[in-house]
Image (cartoon, rainbow, N blue to C red; front, side, top):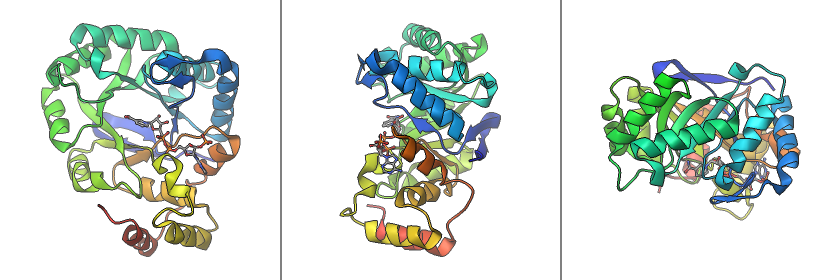
Length: 283
Ligand SMILES: NC(=O)c1ccc[n+]([C@@H]2O[C@H](COP(=O)([O-])OP(=O)(O)OC[C@H]3O[C@@H](n4cnc5c(N)ncnc54)[C@H](OP(=O)(O)O)[C@@H]3O)[C@@H](O)[C@H]2O)c1
């Protein structure tokens, strides 16, 4: 399946669907590299299917996820610039020196630069201006190409953007799916105005959207059968049809990897978008 792209502030060009890697290589700061070869093979398959963007973090498996992403990308035989790698620094490393150290370690595990580096969550201790200053140094030094934030509401995002002096904050990675549409109220108007990328995480509601007994599923599956698509494909297509939005579903089976890419290459009608949104109101 051929990838689709969107372009944002600062000439940031991103695939509209990427692969989330939470749980691939371990859990919360807990490495599990025992299945590394298996995971690398899975990501290589994903690349063959057409994935070009990976979302990882220093926290995911305490860095093992980054090693897996790096190994898959470097062994793919494709030019590095065909890929888009997102990684994140955990907020307890948000100080100037710690950001530089974390990024260096992430780049070393990945074996390559990071396309987009995010502060994973707002820090309560370190002013955002300090973190942004470190991000700008990382861009100047070539370790990262773009900088952004994650789990920032519109107010915090504007604060981060205001702190940027030399380079721009270009993206905010947030939870966004049919059953969790809060960002449409808060973040999206600002993202559209400022041309910031909204990277939708948990785009399948961590899988719960696809539970037949979940609220709204009846409408989701009715719309899906109308297009000859699956509920997952409709849920993802709905997201990438939204302004400034790209999505990073996680999948660990070849079936799901393939299925999710089939959200590309077509669009829901406005009428069906409205049907879905009535079934999944903003709460
Ligand atoms: N920035 C942040 O704070 C933050 C927070 C959470 C997540 N994230 C990122 O966002 C990514 C995605 O979010 P997520 O992992 O929370 O949830 P998700 O992508 O909404 O859902 C993943 C779950 O859905 C299942 N699934 C995937 N495709 C499917 C399909 N076609 N049919 C049926 N089930 C399917 C997966 O199962 P299988 O594994 O069996 O395929 C997995 O259990 C993460 O991996 C991570 O990279 C970022």
